[in-house]
Image (cartoon, rainbow, N blue to C red; front, top):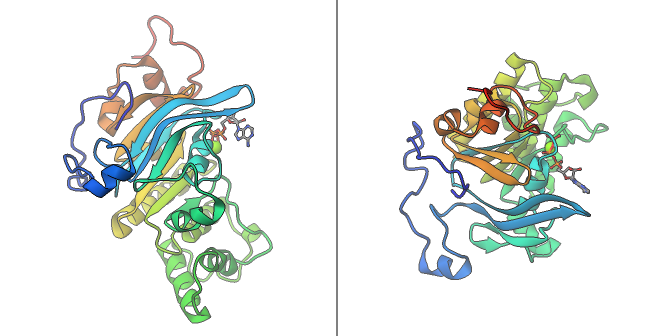
Length: 293
Ligand SMILES: Nc1ncnc2c1ncn2[C@@H]1O[C@H](COP(=O)(O)OP(=O)(O)OP(=O)(O)O)[C@@H](O)[C@H]1O
Ligand SMILES: [Mg+2]
């Protein structure tokens, strides 16, 4: 990983073997991209993103390891959703490159992005459901977008995915008939519908009560373990970050100010990081003398 303030890493239980460590890319892969530490599945390299005069990211370099859950933390407006859109190729960087499994996606057109996007499931901020479609049709739509499966196979897959998220029997309901937590779970069922290799979660627990949020966190951990997915979770929910993350990254004003294991982040010397993880999510004011901890 590549944050400037990277801390010494403590092993994460259960993560051994998931992070390739000393494994290097094959010579063919080397030719396709610059060598990167730990051979991450997704890598942002020197990425700058601006909207008009506003710079969201400045020369950001960050890797996401295979079969690992990386949580990107940061205050509202720091650029978490923008980061996910860059990874999906929905936004393009002004400078720098984005690699998905050694393929530089920055110059790809919409058609070339299709096979890349098929590898991703996305849980949108809000829920991004079609409100006029039933739960069944919402999940089935996510399948039909990418697969030309017979209806029988779609039906069985939808049933299975709804069972995974604990929503059996809701097929005929409309999103407006569901609670916030149930809607998030439909979003998760949609994201896992075609067994993606990578799941991107945009604020999966925001707006939920702590118990419902914890149910969502458990589902994320379950998907990660059972499907061996690579997960990228962007959030400002610290409890969620510690529940699901193998690796935590803290963003602040366009840059990474901390990058390491949950334990390394807990003990991080930067007071801005301490303020953030202790619940002062503003991160906007410089810490004063005698501040935490
Ligand atoms: N399409 C766009 N056009 C112009 N500015 C944008 C666009 N998308 C995002 N921004 C700006 O980029 C910045 C980062 O936005 P982003 O949505 O990524 O924040 P965020 O970290 O996801 O915040 P939140 O936690 O509230 O969801 C904001 O200042 C936002 O106004
Ligand atoms: Mg956002």
